[in-house]
View (cartoon, rainbow, N blue to C red):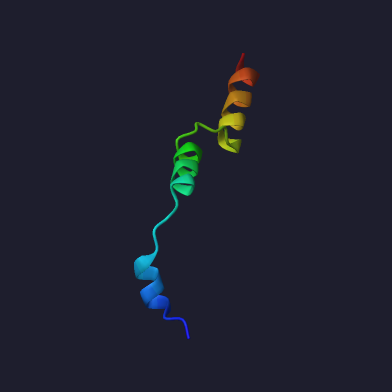
Length: 45
């Protein structure tokens, strides 16, 4: 039987996953709030 606690202790995340996380979290993505704020600015002109 697998000892999950022991396996979790040995777990090391792959570098590719860490690099992908950095790329995703550090990206300045436009969200719905940004779009709504831009629309409000344009409507006030």
